[in-house]
Image (tube, rainbow, N blue to C red; front, side):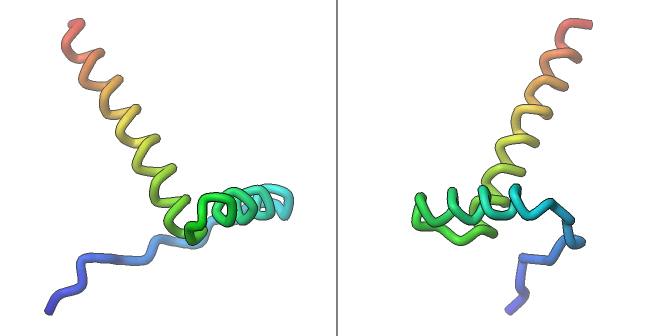
Length: 58
């Protein structure tokens, strides 16, 4: 069975950011890694959508 997950390089953040992230994850009853993946996915989806819209305007 092939694993379809991988690990990204470490990301350095300040302690206040880390605490905010942990508090949010706890409030959502999720792991911090889930919150990070969700945030990155939403960011990329928005960026890719904007890129497509810009291409259509040309």
